[in-house]
Image 1 (tube, protein in one colour):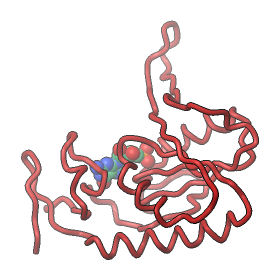
Image 2: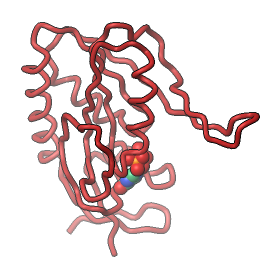
Image 3: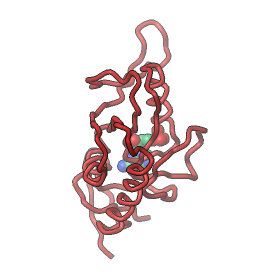
Image 4: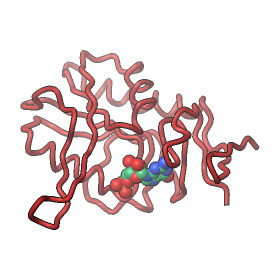
Length: 178
Ligand code: 5GP
């Protein structure tokens, strides 16, 4: 079985390129039919989404736009609470049908934050497309509309996902070897 070493950890092959491509085609087909006649705005969440977003968009045949954001968290100056902000948003979302493009949804904390921030932007609709979902870890009520692959509660790298900054450029998905 194919393995890769990243920093101090070893990972084994989990999903190959063909499996990844097939799973992405399936959700692209659903998006193409669900959004027929509409002009959605895909909003990729960096850094992890970059390969998934590229491959997904190549299979989307709608008239659409794609833009990218990052989620920044910082401690408020006066409050002790964490403040979240979307950075890089370069256009108005007012009235738009937005599809968030994520690499992975684990507990759902990140996606919940993003959806909350987008709700204030006056979107017509907000849906979520993710490469991976960990159903056992997900503990939110927000529906995750388009899931390329469901995976168990394990740590994965490759295809955009990193281990301590490394491994994002692997074109297959690897899981931590125990
Ligand atoms: P959540 O907020 O849904 O718990 O976690 C989302 C973030 O956790 C992802 O955007 C990703 O950065 C990180 N994450 C969760 N599970 C994994 C994993 O298996 N591998 C990697 N590389 N990152 C993960």
